[in-house]
Length: 393
Image 1 (cartoon, rainbow, N blue to C red):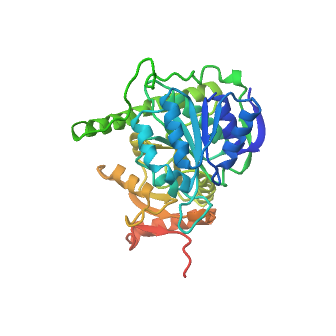
Image 2: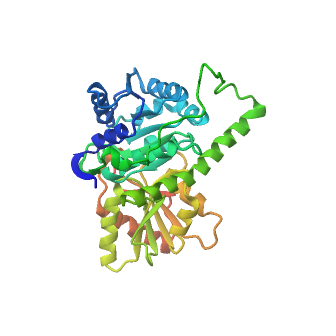
Image 3: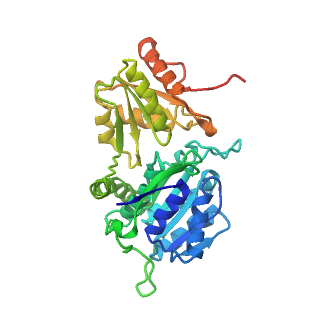
């Protein structure tokens, strides 16, 4: 049985990367992901991880190095946050289009400006369409498990795509939690050996990423889309096997007290635990409120989401980012789109909170439920979304 050890979540993430036996790590320090790669550099320096650690001059260089290493057949890992992720932007599309199995942790942090080192989801929401598999974690245990799962998925020959594991900056990265760590032998063959079929080889030269003239570009993009959609089968199968082997089951959409719930909160990331406390309080007061948490963000789990909300009359979507100029948050857009063609669809109200690391409390969720009920009976708000906790200035 694995042992339960109190440790900082960033250190647990680094431990999982070590257990995945990566070949190349490229890193540039940016708060709040730095502790992950710092610990990996120590493991490499101490000889506990036989890998090549690259100190690069920017996040753009970090992801570029990952693309080169992965294209040469190496198992690769990097981590970043906020402006660092934004600096990677142009290369992220290339990694997916070249079908490179890179694993990256994003320690979610607000984008400038004004500059903020604190947590929200604006960094990853700006990268929704990069073609990477993307998951969200709620706890340190989930973050550790998610790294192992990510390497299992990207190494599957039916996937061969890069993957982002999102963990909330500071609220998760720097928190000390009791975490069950596996001994290497306990993982068994859950983590397959890294073998890449599409790679640069001087003995068998190929061209990767040539110019896509108009006659082939559409088809190339369709292939990436098909690969991302089809990866879901492997993602779910790897979660199911993890549950059978280790007793911790994960799903693309997870629910909490949704039985007979007419009002559903929808969350992603660490604030889901706070939302559970609000649901408990509302249930004790006799209100039929439940919670759905989106773990798999890309590919979006459309059928599982629709099934989870089937009996609800109201969905209060919680966004940690404003899609500026779109009159909503990105998750709110996703939910409305997912339900648009369905008859008798629930009413959807979008709420934005916790921007730039502002505290999210049980009281915030109680207010959200009250407002959602009010909008359902008295008409929607003037704006398409409601910004919770906005102070008058």
